[in-house]
Length: 81
Length: 430
Image 1 (tube, rainbow over the protein chains, first blue to last red):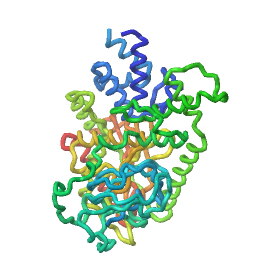
Image 2: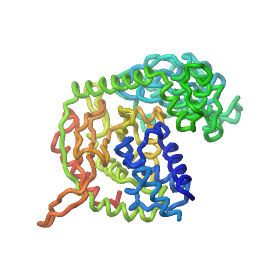
Image 3: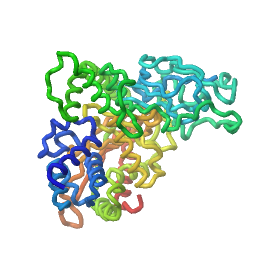
Image 4: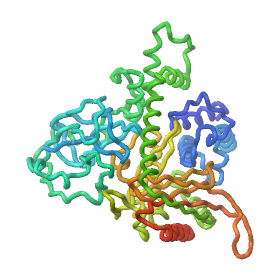
């Protein structure tokens, strides 16, 4: 899976769990908790959605890496090699 | 004949708008079926019916705003004409009068009902609204369609089972908006752009008006609470190291879809502590405290556009952590989507507010009258903690209690918080 495909999957999952968010306005590098007021439930939903879309196991200890879109993409890239 | 009235969905509600009927005359309904979606200015609420029967007629059409208590529809009940003779007091909570107190919880205080004859003898004209047969339009999509002035029959659904979603409405709106020359000559854009365009195309007044309405509702409820309820406030710090260690170990055993958030431990501990302090759980009405046996925790959930709603998680004291987690996830998702059920919005017996990890250390909440207490949790963070003559860093959370001094005193309130602390030191027993 290449970078673009991973990005597409991550963006799809974000839109699915938070359809009210305008993804075009999101800065991929910034923590979603600061940017769009995500709470721990939103982050968990994102992690679950990404897990279900990709099959990648994401232990709880890695959640802190999943708080920005860039973080999610980086994490998946390292796991999908 | 029974009357289905505009329910009181929270002490702060005076009127509501039927935005969608999910039934039509002739449909058979059973208790608990969702038959209408009502806009209360805070959220779109799926309203349940509390009597079985057949819909006789719809009195209030979609789109009309009526006060609490107004007859919305008539229902032919199976028990036949006795319904009319029932005095108001024994009526189920669907016809809650517009009194300041919320309707009693339907679960615990429903008057006993005569067993109905089995349905087989009267084949229903139509099955009674199983979820799969409900009109496949999400209330959020309905709202967007109303805001945009869209006709939903022209919208193609792409959601589960062909359901029309908000994105479908917005996509259709963009297509509809394309022909006129006034539309900016945007290049055919990917879906992301369509959403954005549709959003900016939406009349801004609708959204602003809605937010202003929510502010008014919150203002009215909070001002009333501060005017009428003599609050007292207590706070303590709770060492969460045992709870967090237990949680980490527990979550290692669970697949990602089953993992727990620490807030679930807090909710269960609050519900268990309430058992020993019934004076924190219930309502102040008619100059006296009415305790509640059921423990329905109102969970304050903030909306990303501003404002908040505190729908109820039912019977938290009787549920496992996994069940509470599943309920909480479902509730948060539906709050964010703007879809709640009437029983959830009306019958919380005590409220819990948590400002989350990004928040501040301490929250001193305003009681959601006629409830008599509110538990607040600040952010969970590593803080210096002295124990056994040593200072170390531990995960610590500040718990506060705002309580009604007409019902309880600081001494009991303090013991309540101490009990909460003790329960959180034994997470395996939660």
